[in-house]
Image (cartoon, rainbow, N blue to C red):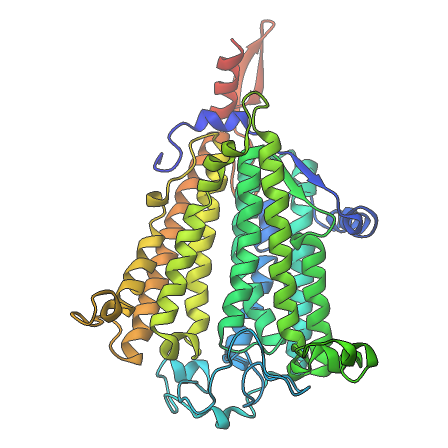
Amino acid sequence: MGIYIRNPTALLKYKYSSTDKSLTSKYVLNPYWSWLVTLFPESMAPNAITLLVRIRTFAAFPPGLGLVFANFLSLVYFNPTLSCGAKPLHVSLGGAWDPLLAPAKLTEQHHFRGWASWLGLGGSVVDKADELAGNCAPRWLYWTFAAGLFMYQSLDAIDGKQARRTGTSGPLGELFDHGCDAINTTLGVILTASALNLGLDWWTVAALIATSANFYLTTWEEFHTGNLFLSAFSGPVEGILLVVGVFIATGFVGPSYWDQGILTVTGLKSSAIIKAIPFKLKDLPMNDCFIVFSLVGLIFNIASAARNVYASLPKKGRTPASMLKPLSRLSPYIIHTSIMIFWLTGRKADILHSTLLVPFMFLWGISFAHHVQLLILSHLTASAFPATWKHPLIFIALVGAVDANASWLTNGRYTTYLQTTHERTKWTVLGGLVLAIMVYAHFVWEVIGDICAFYDMNCLTIKKKEKIKAVEYGKTVMKNKPSPAEIAKQKQKK
């Protein structure tokens, strides 16, 4: 107790504030969410809806984050390569090679037939890429992805409404909600990579970086402004709906459809307008266009977040130089992302271009979620920004990256020690993943335990208040036993 929250009374200062400019939320989704929350009994805790919910009148349970995780497990079983067929990655069916990131060579024998084979439980250890021609996920799988992600968005949106219905609003809800969202970010990217036929390559990594950077920027912005800003087009609303649409479309046309060039699909490739352009215009595959769109969105989000943070600074003495300190607080994310990329560059054949990329990205995602939670906790407790050295999972990535690039770093004096073979690389990544899960689980257990103890509440259930005897106006009555938070609040009033 008290490892992460040294002064729990600081939680009393917490007040949730948000600005949502989304027209989709206001006029379309909010009426649906207001109806949906009425299906849940008031005896159900809002956090249970976000994580894993059970409606008594249903025989089965519809989970929130659990649905997306079930989608992830089904993807790992059916499509561990995140691609359909043995095509060169990112070759547009319109005839143009991807102009930005070179595709992987199909002759490299670093693909795996399935998850069980990858774990060494049977079958060939590796398969030639041309043997993966039939390694396409069934079309219906992408419809389950769409249903799972849409239900997650719905349940994630109503937990706040449920908290207000049950009178259980508080800092735990925001911490829990953001933690689930951070994990869902990585899982969603992996599912989308399969739907768009991105495969095991840099574009999938770029998708993860763009998505996680947007999430971290929003959290960084909230830390400095005290307000959660959602623009007219935001990731949690329109972004998720766009991905749901991609999943539904992929269920009809298949992942290979997105390999077609954008000019080919739109019929512009042979148009007079395109031919009149003095330089050759690349027929960029549609799946790559989605990632470019995400990267462009990231640029706009950076500008918007920076503008809001700058506006929140004290007007007196505010100059562009005043942004140096807030901008320096992006360093934990930038450093961790750079280290993970450095690790990948040292083991491209063993990690980037093999199904080992999936658990590697999950390791990345757990580390990212831990970064976000540390930042959110600092916001909730009005404490100092967590310094880079307080992010322990960065050091796991650092060990892997230094080991993978030992020869380059030492000019050939030393070679890799942990990742000498593909098998040893696999166990290094898995070991890092297990350790990351343990560190993150410890954080979640300790923080949730501390907050629940302070407010005398449960995380996933609504706790029945303990009754105590009290004397009022000369009469003995039964009253709810005050929580440590209520006692601290009374002391502050005095």
